[in-house]
Length: 387
Image 1 (spheres, helix red, strand yellow):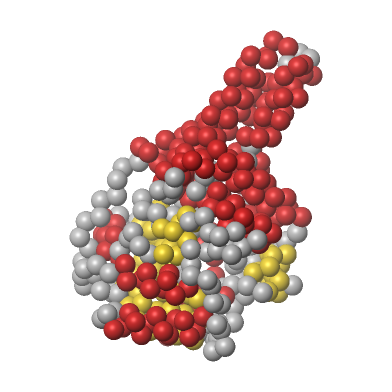
Image 2 (cartoon, one colour):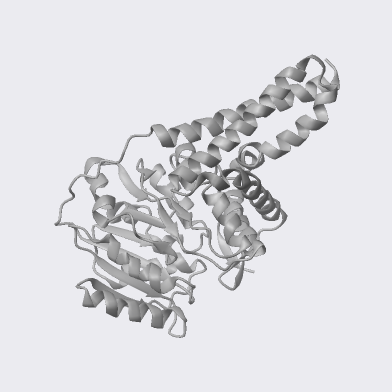
């Protein structure tokens, strides 16, 4: 077999692998059963924590959206701010006053969190300060809560005894800059869109919006034991699985209102995520060029190889066409799950893959990450230290 045919065979096999994973992820979202909410017990105690840092453009609105969480199950809501001089503090206090006037149980806590992972440190400080509860939720400060209630998040635990964590996929709303648009394309138009990613990595956990059974969280070491991990959610998922417990994604989708970011800022953000993969699950790094942004390298490789592919030319051409079709199916399925218009699906395939490829290269080039004004280094195993 000639070199050109060998290359064509390899590209055809690659396109078959990429297409099968893409089509499976696209169909799984469509074919997965609807969530049965049920009626949770009103006797359980629930705490919702929203860690805040800085005066994000939509912070007041996203914190106000916490009112959407109300249902039959009562809960206490905590806005956690690390320092007295944090610009998020006056915003959190003003919104807390508004929600208290509506009858909600809301508190604002200055945590003085000092852990390397400030989010995990803030969550640990809240859990240490307040009385024990049956369930605790983290909802990041940029997430709009419209679309789900605490009832929806608690009810599945009564039916699934092994369930330790139930997370809600988060997408974005397009934002206001090119960087925002690229991030939206990735989270609502690619295989990395969380509604689709949850069907590929069924044991995973993304903690932007997650409900945890506290007895299982405590068995896994609690938030305080995660303060040195940048990917605290990935490490928590690993620990819960080691205990024989399960995590899964909810069928609902929430929206992040993050905006005002540059292209470099969003590349840095996703490079940070991939740096966590590199440190904690290094075997998965190869899956990114192989599956997550494989389509356009495949097309380029096919264009170069087709003239010398010999008898494998038809198979390579068909495989390439199927890969492109599967990538478009992913974009359509992801945007449908996010309830976004489909008109941008084609553009998303290029923009999302370019962003993910750029982040991948950056994640391979250094173990240093920039996070909330700090430069940190991720050591093997995912442990953080100050640079």
